[in-house]
Image (cartoon, rainbow, N blue to C red; front, side, top):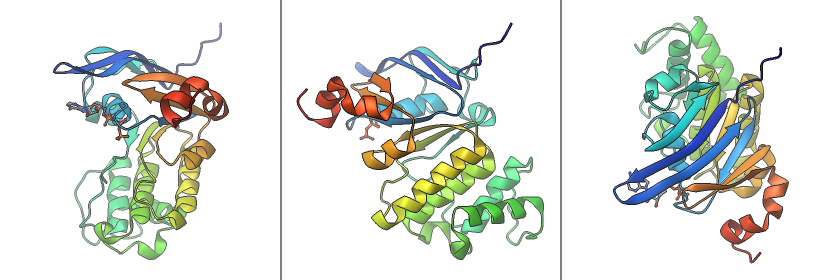
Length: 254
Ligand SMILES: Nc1ncnc2c1ncn2[C@@H]1O[C@H](COP(=O)(O)OP(=O)(O)OP(=O)(O)O)[C@@H](O)[C@H]1O
């Protein structure tokens, strides 16, 4: 008998109450391995909170989160990361005082089974350095590799985050507004980076992005959040044509 493949990520009846407020309510999502999923919704709809629940930063008050069929609802952030959950944050999670090369090399070193000790002048021929150099080239940061990460443009910082995710070989990747603050001239290159990261890792991608045109071109499914719940989960085309979505989110009358 054939085994049914597990969803890469399954969210069942997820709820979060903080004080008297309902932040997430009955969130249901079933995401197949390799899918690229956009998450949209008005400000305050719960998109970042959903990412926080998936990555383990906040504990839901009801429901379950399954990664590859395993219930991770009660696992902490680091355990989920070890299981292959990768994430970028709205506020950058890179080390600003390290160079681009050092940031990627450190991630490569940890990913290849090393530790977080940082050699200021690592041999550029070791495995972690080679992987870092190769990845920096792929994302188009070669000319910036010796610049401090805190001093490069928003677009380059985002490229760096993509490079870090690429070397960590995450199975499920959460990107929270990767285009935020990125100059319009840098959007196309960053979009390509995200596309090639996904293709190379064959990961499952979830992405919150307010830049709707970019998002719709990148994903094959869109989840629309409204008031803490998932209102619709469908192809970009069906989402754009869904009257419920149009009135709730896009602001046009249905
Ligand atoms: N720790 C918290 N305590 C109280 N309220 C919270 C907490 N975290 C989030 N909220 C509230 O939950 C709601 C959802 O917030 P969230 O940041 O997830 O929305 P979002 O969809 O990501 O919005 P945006 O598009 O503005 O980033 C907001 O009303 C927010 O104020």
